[in-house]
Amino acid sequence: MEHYYRELVSFLSARLGNRQAAEDVAHDAYLRVLERTEGEQIEHPRAFLYRTALNLVVDRHRRHLVRQAEPLEVLDSDERWHSPALTQSMQQDQRLALMQQALDELSAVCRDCFLLRKLDGLSHPQIAERLGISRSLVEKHIVNAMKHCRLRMRQWES
Image 1 (cartoon, helix red, strand yellow):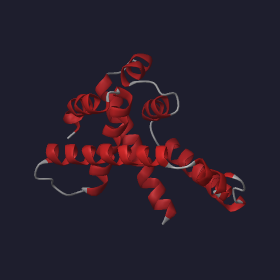
Image 2 (cartoon, rainbow, N blue to C red):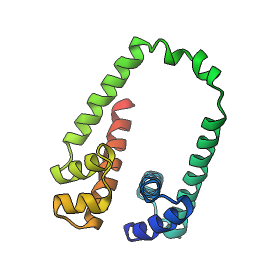
Image 3 (cartoon, rainbow, N blue to C red):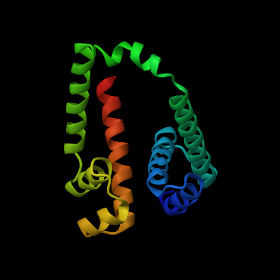
Image 4 (cartoon, rainbow, N blue to C red):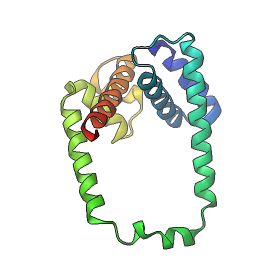
């Protein structure tokens, strides 16, 4: 299914008008498909992947509309902005520690690809050039890192 990646990103870029957003949606679509179909055979993988990606685009659009329509008073009255609970901040610290542990389990190049993309915001070609590997390998490493981290976080949280 990985060979549909570039095609899907091009398709989403045309829809979203932004390659970075298209890559993010494509990553999320791959993860959803991989998580939902682990061990299952998909009859039409390309169609399933595209449908998942389009659903994510629609969700993204809806969230954007909701965010635009939300009055500022709602944000002012929302207690999360005024008094973040200590337990909530402790839970975030624990989650960050677990995420770091999951990242530490990855190979160095896999972890580097993921961090350069998610933290530094570099594009796949930029990461490929920086690390001296192919773009398709960068894409595979990022998908694998995301899949691994989600799996580990689920295991630890249950």
